[in-house]
Image: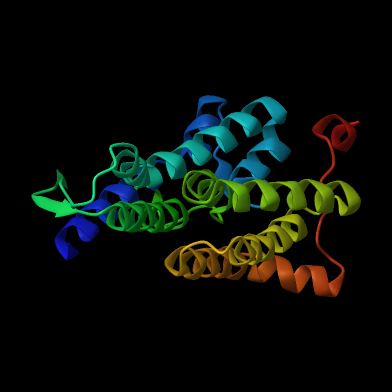
Length: 223
C-alpha cells in the first residue's frame, strides 16, 4: 500500500510538473517568468497574452489535476461490480474502494506539488488553483462545484483573482464537511485548501495593504 502511494504520488508530481503556462507563453514568444507577476499560472498568462492562451492554460492545468486524481475512479468500479472483497488489483497489490480514493488523493497531492515546484522550470511554478480544482472535481464533485461558484461570485464582485481563490479554498472543506463525506476527504480538502491559501500569502499581504491589482481585460488595460 505504501509503495503504491509513493509511486502514484511521484507519477502525479511529474504530471503536475508539466509547465503548460510556460510552454503556451513560450509558443507566443514570451517568457512568462519575466513578465507580469512572473507566475506561470493561467491568470498571469491571461493578463499578458489574453483570454485564449489564459483559458487554454487553465484547462490544461485543471486536466493535470483531474488525471492525477483519476485513480479514485477505481472506487466506482468496485462499487459498480458489487464486490464485497478487495479483489481489484494494481501495482502488485489488492485494494478496497477506499484505497482507490486514497490513491486519487496521493496523485493529486503529487500534481499540486509538481505544479507549484516544477522540476522542469527550476522548481518554480503556479499557485495550484487550477490543478487543485481539476483534481477535486474528480474526488469531491459537489465541493469543487460549490467552490467554483464561490470563486465566480467573489471575482465578479471584487475583480480580485487572488481573493476569489482564497475564499473558494475556504469553501471547499466546509462543503465537504456538511456533505458528510469520508473523513479522509475532509482532511484532504482542508490540507489542499491550506496549501492554496499559503501559496497566496504574498497576495494576502497586498490585499491587506490595498496594493493588490484588480483583474482587467487585456484590451482595457492596453487601450
